[in-house]
Length: 178
Image 1: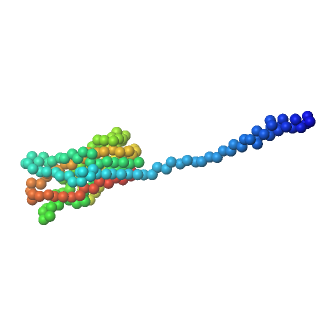
Image 2: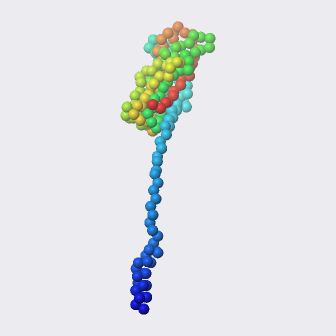
Image 3: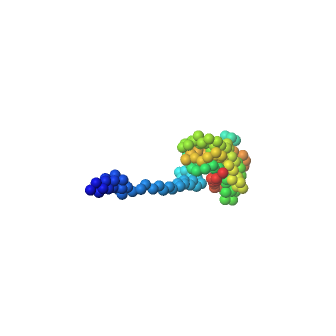
């Protein structure tokens, strides 16, 4: 009887706890976060047409400016450059063209994350139908969302010698990874 009692006590203290609790096992997983290059450049839809009016002799002498507020919005998950070009010189049916190079743009960071370290904005970049020219560059990293005013400037150089009317060209903005 002592033996049976000793067996039962030993069973309760030694074997039963192992039967009641499962053994702990470990597993592991490697977690990766993969960041892809994502870029977005939008032009304010309400400003899809920019008009530079020459209506006085001072305009023809000094040129004219118009500041389009919040004109561009840029998002980039990495380093980037924004470029501008004209698809052609400014033309009017039946008239001589206005050289695109007489029009310049200047971007000014105004909203969102404007203090992106190392961001460069160029001053008065002349349009060119042949070459997309850099106007904004972030050589260090991307931006969550930065908006830019764009100042358009027409020099007026030689404009007084042209026929009156509306001269047009399409301006194209592009964003590229650096």
